[in-house]
Image (cartoon, rainbow, N blue to C red; front, side, top):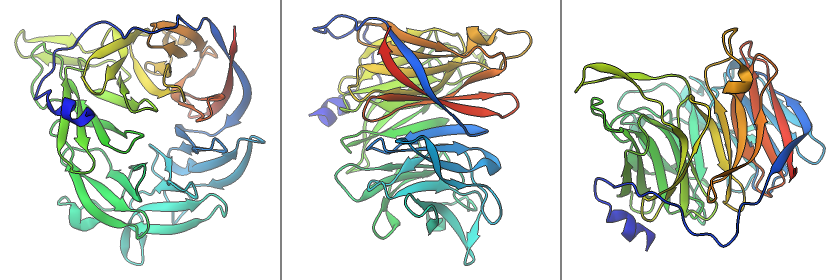
Length: 395
């Protein structure tokens, strides 16, 4: 049992080197050929529907949401941030039946109630429901949902919902028929939590963050796993990265999880040496065995951070958006920003797609569930953004 093996970890874990034996060699060089370019300014995130028919893009502030038809690559519907709506950027997802996109609404009231999130109809293009914010579960009296992380739980009518990833905030289970809170799943762990993901088999919730202790030279990044059925802690990877775990993504078969570090340069005071230390990892992305906690591989590249990562439908290829701070006159964007297609089992870069137009940098990345397309979000210092839709072909 996966959960039984996870529980055996206890509070710590000795990271194991090495990779699993595989029967096939590297798949060879591939090429990311851009077939379509879409425009959505101040881009923050992307999400495909599970049938690959729809792609939704999110822009910060007033740039709202756009739904794209992937058969024609045209805008089907668009929501902008005009009053009474103000859209928070951040993660985005479809409901399990793919009839709605879940909207993050910032400090909005409806019928004198603060709104938690909205349901945007894929067919109608209208906001068909506003779900009230669950004030009873928030001791800090947060006024409205803000950035909402939403994950349907496979095989159930439940969804995991988090309103902004701050410490001690509750992670809630919603009934997606009544759109009421079914129960509080867990409280966000102590420390700084940045990201979460739900396993495709619906069994585990993973939360990435760091330990709430002063930095003493030991890695502080950690990944916590919770059993969705019981809400109990199922296991934890301590020292997953030197600093905060900022990105998480389960593989399609739920056996593996990829983690990434935050972008930018972080320096922390080592309380043992009283010296500032660079908190960037040599490996910006690592892949872990969920059952044992073993590290199976790591990718090295641009010494800054990760803006997004995603497994393909087979779980062997991992797309990574590597980027640092926005390019300046002192830096070469080709050196600091690129999308990498990585075979993590053989530790080989199958394709690289650098961003080289002088002002742009990587924002997000997402595979289509059918494995045909890779959507790459690219932004620049002025807020102008585009989505490049690439096909993976033999080089």
